[in-house]
Length: 265
Image 1 (cartoon, one colour):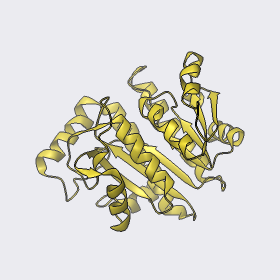
Image 2: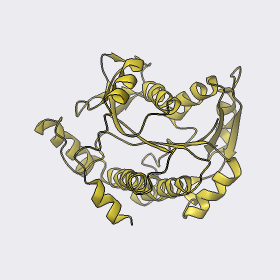
Image 3: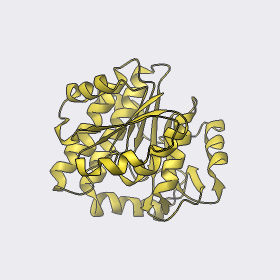
């Protein structure tokens, strides 16, 4: 398998890359800054899979054709979006990367029959309605983050999330897995390998390394689909992933998927 990893120098992607390579999968890591290339290449040392680095700026992905040209060059089986403006460049750049470029890669990937999985890293508060499993206080906290702390980021991520959800619901292409991984507040501490996954609490942290570990396991299965919220917790990752699949948990529950389909038709 060949994975196109967008945002290859992001902290989650740096943890994810060696995990994918350890599966004997090949990875093309897309980065903007050539100074980061040696750090990326070092991740492939001694791994079963092959690691390639593609120097390309997501700022330049303004249309679906721009995304398609990268996909056509790489010819991946799976695509992982772990990119973002990271608050650099103001709201306009956040929209350009987290919304526009993300949507262009989503649409180009859905249109490519070779690609069978797309994993989008989002965030736990990216939704319009209070879900049944969150308390009023937890929902108020998430709303505060989205509306007052990171409004441009939250708007862009919600747009990308809903776009992918709408395309998945509309096309129902098989085999295709549209996986939306939605971590809470990110931490740089070492992985605990214990999580809350699926219908989680509304506030909490998750290590970036644990996000990568969960993403790797979700990608490795053929029965993962939909939205998965993620925090650190008490359940081992293996058991948590098995549980959400077995119970068919999808935290898009409560959102207006039909409305998303209509909006993007």
